[in-house]
Length: 405
Image (tube, rainbow, N blue to C red; front, side, top):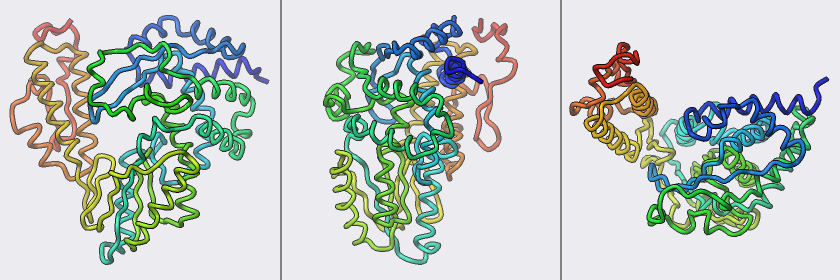
């Protein structure tokens, strides 16, 4: 029979490879990977002996798609986040409603968009009856989360789920790490990347530096995404079971309701706001309430959903054009090497992958073929403009004509 020590180190190895998957070649990850086995055993011992402490985070501002403050945890702490996620998420998944889309396997933005499209079609009886769309947003959601309330909700879901059947052998470890992760204040000893000017234009309510004690989750951590779902789980149940809303979906703090009665939807705003204020210390953003007839559609998760068709939102289009322009500028300045070409391919294909799900062929044609692009000197586009491929001979690092080393 496995001991707790053996189980924990095995689980840490799994968490390490999960954390590494999307963070290859970052400085933190590379430093950890040099001697990762030794590092994982040290981490195991720190957890077992209740010595684990989070290391300083790196704080910086990102501009796209909107201006946000991000706290990037040290890679060692990311391993712990994945460890907690792997322990707890199966129990949470058993309890989450179908139409909570964020940070969930086989869900995500595309799934949410298609679900809202199906809500409109079903509620309007295939576009033959009137129905209305209510889209709402929570004000300063991540910065307003009360950690004490959140921890109680996490513990409640673990208690009433099948956690005992899943990993009861690690329950004490999970309880210990929960306290450490939930109440860690990433503002303490954080490393600021950038300068004070970067924060200009960011509303004070969008910065963790302005949150009250034991309030706010850092944007950028896996646990923040997971815990934000848990925090609103009771709200999801309230909307579905108490308000009896059949067509409801939520992605983080954006949620959509579809109903045949416009007046009824307006009354629900007050009831939802009351619940949010009393139970979660949150409120609906008063300037982000959208209530329209279904024929006008709704913008949701980067797409515009209209009767019988889905378009990509203008912000995504503009972002693609801006990215292509920046790529051309960089390649004119410096000849790309294999790594930069592979990065360019990944970025371009991520846009094309998203857009391929919607009616965007003309947009893609204009963006990719409307003018000569530098990156097309090094590769080609497939026939449907859904993928950029690098020429095979250029992937050989010995090719010197293009400055490769």
